[in-house]
Image (cartoon, rainbow, N blue to C red; front, side):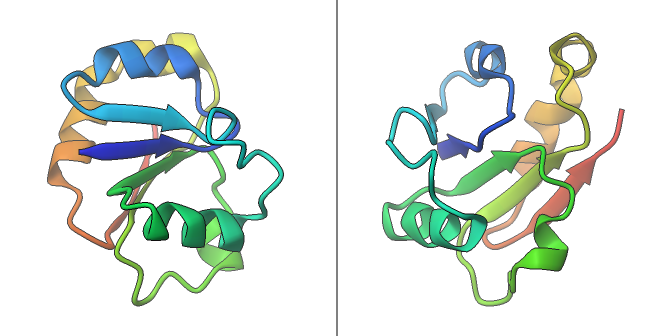
Length: 105
């Protein structure tokens, strides 16, 4: 699975998502893209999931008819996320194409 991390998603999480391919918006030089443009770029580039910490994304963007799934981590705290890696992996594996899921720890 091809996964994109939005700004704010703790990069150390990437080590725990093997065998998935994980890139960050910064690595793709997409750091300055607004949410709609970022979703379009990720969709166009074949990403399956955007992992973000932006809890307002679903209110700011029309997510209907998108192929990319969105996983929202409701914290930017790496220690809290690290304690719940199994939940993150399970949510990624269960996220359908174009799906949306929020994880609260």
